[in-house]
Length: 330
Image 1 (cartoon, one colour):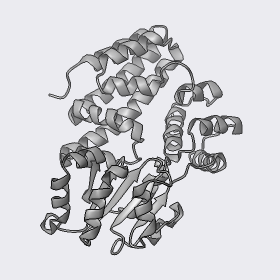
Image 2 (cartoon, helix red, strand yellow; image 1 turned 90 degrees about the vertical axis):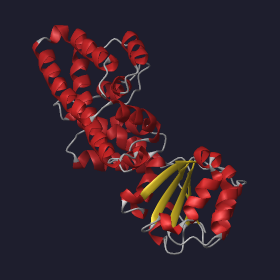
Image 3 (cartoon, one colour; image 1 turned 180 degrees about the horizontal axis):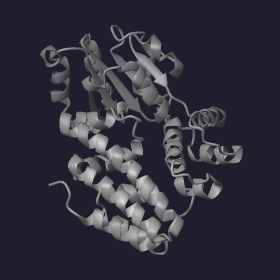
Image 4 (cartoon, one colour; image 1 turned 30 degrees about the vertical axis):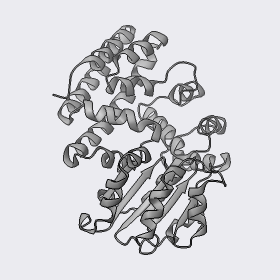
């Protein structure tokens, strides 16, 4: 059975236990997940490769009713035609206490997996096509209006063009702009270009992510390839502070549930799929107590930069190098 992306509420999980989401619009998929899964604590996430390597164990666990105290939700990431055999086996067993959602990239019409889900009324197949620029522009306008941020139409177009039809990426870019605006800085084309990485150099976000992941070699390369200005240093500390606070929330959640995939999948706002692996690295590298110390040190560094603006580049460079090379999760 084929449903449109705005018809997710038509899915009846008492009947529709196998669901296929396919397409490149990850943001719209995440919104669909939020509609389907009200309770994020009962979701298990697997990669297709992981399942194929442990096929029998996966099937046995799914079919073991004693495994589930309540309705169980399974998300299978990067699903392809390779997993069809396993899905056919599960379908033949009349699942009752589990809902399985397969997340796939683009699936061509000739895809056997897509065809299997489209032709059976008990199964659900939902395509998630890229949003057009008009939809993304409207989403961006509404977001910025609600946040009280004034940006020209040309700059909104600049942001939208970067997102390639994916509203998740749009939300991530808009959040960067929101965080930057909290520092009282004027939003112009130059600042937007730096924030959304339209320049040839590495973005500030990439610098911070690799620092928190302690990719020291990568950090050294980024610092060597960029010519940050004094004004950029304040932007870096503010962006770093926002990222550290988000990491603190993730780290605290992980310390409580001990489940990295659940921690990532339940994050609010959702983590863009390209950032999930480096975010996992960061969670493993940092304990919450050390992140709290980092947040304090960032605030102190920002004060030092404001007092010594002519020496700001050295201050932020030394800070980043020290944090990317230090041992913190002990």
